[in-house]
Length: 343
Image (cartoon, rainbow, N blue to C red; front, side):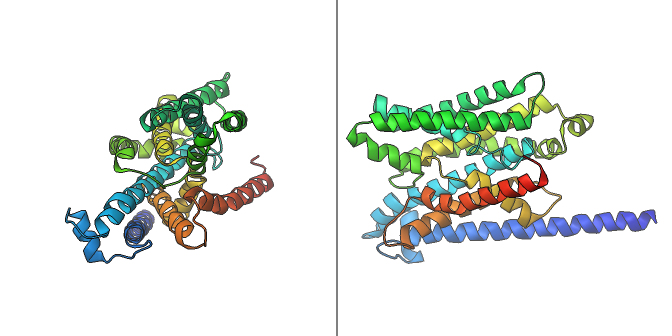
């Protein structure tokens, strides 16, 4: 009997490992295909041979500028920002055990946005200052939300409610800044607020790339602790997890990557909200959905940008398309949670 049970467990793990590996490989292939589509498609469609030549530094008439200067930075920004939003949202949702607990809903991206708009409208600051301000704004916002939500004991529900309230306050501040903004500052601020890959240059996403290179290994190392936190504080503590320290470290890392992604492309709506649940659904249980969440975040951003560029007569920023996708899911989730009595 024991041998049969052990055999069943081994078989169960093997099936889920195979599903995880196959799904992850498929997500990588889709991401790779979308990256190539971003490089190939535009007013002029270039061949794979021409794009490869440009990527290897060769001069190709027309393609060198269109691909090397315009499309490549746009594609890399979408890839990195989408990945960052995906893993940031997954870490928040898993750590706090609630699908509503993500940077979009609880006000962290609003904090980054408010800081960036202040720098654009009031200070007329450079892109570097705007990026730094966006990261600092996100960190300050999460510190305020976390501090106010602690009370005598940490409460996830209290954190979400306080975060929603802080987000409303920050959105009001952003609206006021837009009202007092000078006419020539409005297009920059509006483009930044909508979440857009337009005008991204290679140097703009290098801080995000460096941050991801540092943070992803740390998150992979803490992946088991992250999954244990989802079981609840008592269960995680009994398994040897220092819940407060691990939770704070995970949240700080998630805020850093999310805020830096926001500083790079603006607050692309609902990516951090959608990526984690989709990843969990496609890979199943038994394995961390951290990397799949990042890949799905990248896929959503790249696909939405392609739709925004080519599916309509007018070109729309990527954040508009993701907002159209994400808003109905948020309503559906709220109705579902309300029926279950979770909210």
